[in-house]
Structure formats: structure tokens, C-alpha cells
Length: 424
Image (cartoon, rainbow, N blue to C red; front, side, top):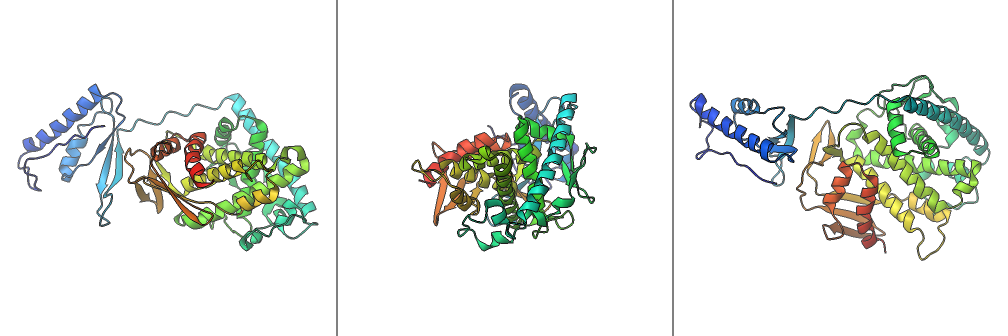
């Protein structure tokens, strides 16, 4: 909105010789903050870039009023490359405290318990399916699709995923007593799924109807069972796994597809009419899966940063949704083998433009910056490279705003413009 410069006529490391000279700079800084606080009440954050000595930094910090001034984002100068952004976000001062969490209502607690009980019943149905399917074939694809379905288009690495019976399913249960669980859910050493009341309430806010929540929880545990097959992504092996985003992106995608195909098989067995329209079924599965992912991201205020790997996972699945929505095209019916061909080929899609920074060996996009450095979305589709920059019908600034708002439908709406120019 505006840039305010406070500078010396002759900058120098030894510019100050008396406390009064330092205080003059501090007073100018305080005056600037007062003007912003009094006359620009809509300003929610000031971005402060200060080339000063440590003593002056403390003096500037002492001018900030927690009641009169907006939040102040400070920056660290790090010239780590020949060109590009040299300032990385450092300390956020004066940030308003997060709102106190409203205690769960009795209805929310009751609903969470019902969802646990339903998951326990679904686990027993999964066990029955796994036992029956093991008599059909030793291939997980044949077990979920039937031995007559062709899998010629499926890459060999998909065949290495486990059958449902080769996961810890048969000894798994649901802990109906644990209500507070670190990290929202866990699979205990005793083989019991434990689900947190607060997270189940966040899921219910995303998926209001009980059948959708039941599918979401089935997809969640199926995804985790896939990790505990040959992928070997257990509690111990997954420590610091976020250091390898490209590997984890593929591991998660395969587990997602494995879970969706098993959910399709279970639905076809118990509620065949719901799975009759294959295209609509998997479109709904993608929406349920992405809303489940958002339920994990819904805690706290709107994020100011977003892990690049996690954003990629959303972009991949929203792009798959658009591909499923288009279907076979030309008004033709979308058969199962067409859907299988889509699901077993992970979209290659990547966003560039938002400022990138790292901490804890993770890579993040900054969401609170109005400036995007040459924003572009790149897609590799059917052997062709497509690059989409800003234009009248496609705004990456709006895309990042929808990410910050955790608005899946908004992200889909923005992506659709790029999709229509890519997939014709």
C-alpha cells in the first residue's frame, strides 16, 4: 500500500555518537507507527526492513505499542544467492493472540463418538473383504477391480503395493475411549486407531453429512494401512521424512489412490448403486479426500506460510478432479479403465512465484506477500509443457488468497481457467 523510509543523510556504522541521536530515529519510527495505527486502521501488518545496530533494534522494538499498532513482521538479510530475494521473514511482533478455542459442544462430542463407532464397524467389514479377496488373487489390483479388469496401462511400480490382507488390518481396532490425541490421530503400538475429538469436529465442519465422514475416515485409515505395507512408512521411519518432499509426494499419492480404489471395491460390494457411476464416484472421493486434508490444516488463524509439498498435493488432486470432471469427453461414458488410467498417472503440476523460505528443513511458500515474483503455473500434460502466467481469466494472486483462506472450491475455480487452456 505504501512504503515509508526513515534514513540518515549520511548512513554509517558509526553514525550515532549520543543517545539523543538514536532517540531521534526511534521517535521518527514511533511517529510512523502512530500515523498507521490512527489513520490507516485497515492495515493489519507492517513489514519492517531495518539496517541498524543491535542497540537501535532494541530501541525500535521498545516503541511498539501492543494496543495502538498493527503487527510488525521483521526480516533477516541473507545474501545467499547472486540475485533474487535477500530478505527472509524473521520475528513477527505484536501479533494478536490466537482466539481461544471454543469448547466442544455436547453434540460435537457425541457425534465424534458415533464416528469412532462407525469406523470400528467399517474395520470389521474391511476384514471380511480382505479375507474374501485373498481367495481371488494375490494381486491387490485384481482384488479391488476383479480378475477380468485389464491393467495393461498400469505402471509396474503400482503392482508392488500390498493387498489389504498384507497390512496390519486384521489386528486393528478403534480406541473408543481416547478423546484427546496428539497430531489428531495415531495408530497405537497395540494396533488401535485413536482419533481426537477436536479434529473429528473439524472434519464434521468440512463434511456435514455422516456418510461422507464415514468415507473420509475409511480413506484415512486405508491410506495409513498402505504406508504400513512395503512402503514401510511407520512412526519410526517417518521421522523427519518431510526433508524428502519429492519422495513423500509420490508415496502419499500412491497411498491415496490405493485407498480410493479399495473404497470403490468396498462400496461396490455393500452399496453397488452408489458406485455405478464411476466418474461421479471418484470425483466425490477426491472432494472427500481434499476436505479431509483441509481438516488437518483448519487449526488456528489463516496461515502466513504453506509447505510447498502440501500445496503440491492439493494442486495434484484438484487437477485430477478437473480431469475426472471432463471424463472421456465428447459426451461418452467414462468407464472404469479410463478412470484407472487417470489415477495411476500422477499429474505433473508446479507453482512458482510466491516467495520461498525454509526452516526446520522444510520449504514453504509465503502467503502474506502481495508481491509475486513472475507468477506462473506449469503443467506437463500428454508430452507437452504448458506455462500459465497472469492474465484476465487466471490470477495466481487469487489462487494464493484462496490457499490462505483454505478454500478448496476457490482453488478449483481458479485452476479451471488454466485447465481449460491445457486440456482441450
